[in-house]
Amino acid sequence: MSTEMSPNPFTNLDPRSRRRRRWGRLMEGLASLAALLAIAVLVILIASVARRGAPALNVDLFTQVDAPFGQPGGGIENAIVGTVIMTAMATAISVPLGVLIAIFDTEFAPARLAFAIRMTLNVLSGVPTIVIGVFIFGLLVVGHGYSAFAASVALSIIMLPLIARSTEEVLLLVPGTLREGGMALGATRARTVVTVVLPTAFGGIITATIVAVARAAGETAPLLFTTGIFANAVVTDPSHSMASLPLTIFTKSELPDTHDQQVAWAAALVLLVVVLVGSITGRALSLRTRRQIEQTR
Amino acid sequence: MTGQQQPDANDAGRTPEVATARPATRLGELASGHDSDPAEGREVVFDLDGVTISYSGKPAIRDVNLAVHRNLVTAFIGPSGCGKTTLLRSMNRLNDLIAGASVDGSIRYHGHDLNTSDVDAVEVRRRIGMVFQRPNPFPKSVYDNVAFGLRLHGMKDDLAGRVERALRHAALWDEVKDRLKASALSLSGGQQQRLCIARALAIEPDVILMDEPASALDPISTQAIEDLVETLKTEYTIVIVTHNMQQAARVADVTAFFSVEVGDGGSRCGVLVEMGPTSGLFIRPSDPRTEAYVTGRFG
Image 1 (cartoon, one colour):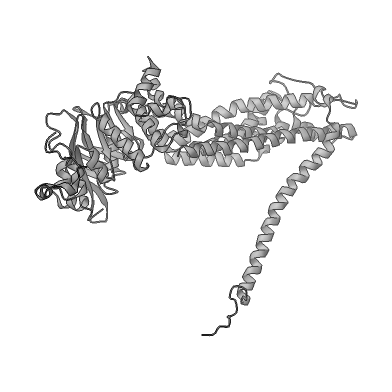
Image 2: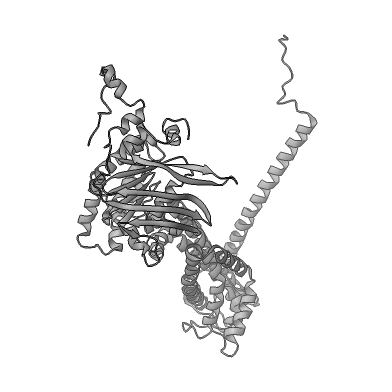
């Protein structure tokens, strides 16, 4: 037996293996780059909105309504109030409906029907929001005029599939053994859903709601058709037009006045912060709920 | 009790005569501790007559005839897939929850057929409680878990007292009395299972069905559950499904052995092979399949 070491097969690679190794590294690098790019886009976006919007952030912005055309000053109080009211109404419509759909789908519907409903919700969530806007325009605006109510209905159609699908996902995470446990104690199926399944999934439903609210708060297209762009006072009557953050950004950014443009940037910053806080809280809560449900398995 | 022997008597000290009379296997030794005719003079609680349970038309277990007697522990044993859990779940209509499940033949509880259309499955389940294979406490407090069924059935007078009695009954009170408000999920697996038993006991059922109640637990928790079964049978009728033959030999007064029959097309269906006093079944099984199973040559 020779005492001389043979060439190390792990470092002296044949050309095929070398090529495989180079490809592997290249692909890994590209994937990392793509991931970095996604993060970079978000960071740049937040930074640029913050840089341009921050100078116009002051008390007046939140306490003054839109100045009449051509006059200096003015804030976005009317837009904030409008967005809050319209989103709240849309939430009040879509959450009960979405949760009920999810309950029906996961707890009561036969498999085929459940599949059909799920497909419908997926399709609905893919419908362009401008189409939803036009639909509600035809349904509620023509003949009645612009109203915050019509806008809320349009927003609730956008929120509905989001809430129903995410609620379904959490309900499906609740283990079947808990349902059996409830029913073995003599609870009806409905009672078990209300007293065992829903409380277990509660956190997930809240998450679904927050994420959907964040989405709806930033929607622009459906508002264009339903509540119009002219509402420069604080309006609380849902049968009238209301201003909104997205439409304020849209109209003000088009105006020649630098103050208006600054207000647009500030409004964009406010909207962005609200949406970011909403999504981050939603995701964090969702992780917590998932962990809690895991424990019951 | 007749014909009993101390299973833990010191083997080495026995005389040869006694040794030859002694059952040859460890299982036999455990089983011989039970009454040789436990059902004598006892009321029949369940009477199953020609029961076949099918899923989407395919029988999972067929033509079962057996009786369960009051205040006894009846064990269902047998290899996986023999339908013993399916049969157990049909005894409180829990199979209703599975789409496509159907029962033929009659399952009578104190003479009343459980499967006629006017029977309220909810009332059935109140009287016939169930404990599952894996502990399934609700993600609520210890107290609320036990109070769940009580509130459900309007048994709200002296709620706290009822909860305490149920927990004492399940031999859990001393361990949880200072943490009744704590989440049930913070308990150990064995404690969770006893909580599930307490939850079932709280609504004062007549029968408790147990589906492999200790299979997910460690040996010490298993011991605690087995001790509990032993004390509970003075008040309740218990049917326990188990994979563990030693457990059946330890806790059951009567044992039913199920097996799987493979049909021509490769279809598998469970059948009841034999049923009898535990002391007899483990020591002198009458069917060769039972003998093969209890001596470990099969399954």
